[in-house]
Length: 181
Image 1 (spheres, rainbow, N blue to C red):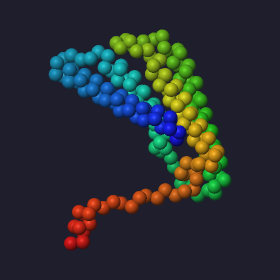
Image 2: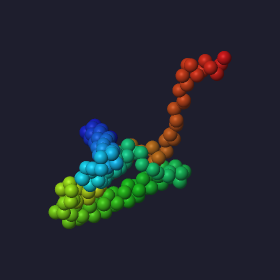
Image 3: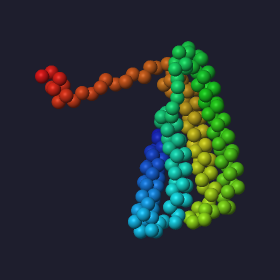
Image 4: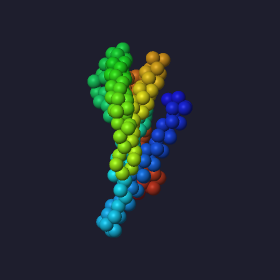
C-alpha cells in the first residue's frame, strides 16, 4: 500500500475509535440520565445512529485495505497460477461493480435525502447515505491499487500461491523452566 494511503487508513482507524467512543459515551450517559434522573439527551439516538453508520463503513474500508475481510480460498489455492490470476481479476471486477452499485445508489439517496433533517439533532438524513458513497469510492480506490499492484506482479497472498506460515509460538523462559523441572 502506498504511504499516503497507509497514512489515510491510520486516520480512519482513529476516526473509528473516536466514533465508537462517542457512541459509547452518548448511550451510556443517556441510559444513566434516563434511569437515574428521568431525563435524557434528546439527540443521543440520532447522533449515535449516524456515527454508527459512518463507523461501520469506514471500518469496512479499513478491513478491505488490510485484507481482514472474510474469504474462502480453499478452491483458489488448488488452482494453477494462471487460473488463480483469472479468479483474482474476476473477483476484483465483481467487487468494483458492487462498489459502483453502492456509489450510484448512495449518491441518489444522498441527493434525495439531504434536504430532510433529523428531528432532534438537525443532521441531514443524507449524511447517513453519504457514508455509503464515501465507502464505495474509498473501497474502489483500494481495489484499484491492489489491481494495479497485481498487474505489476505483486499478488495478494491467496492468489500468489505463497503459503501462509504461522510464526513459531514464543514461550517465555519462565514457562520453559517449569516444563523442564
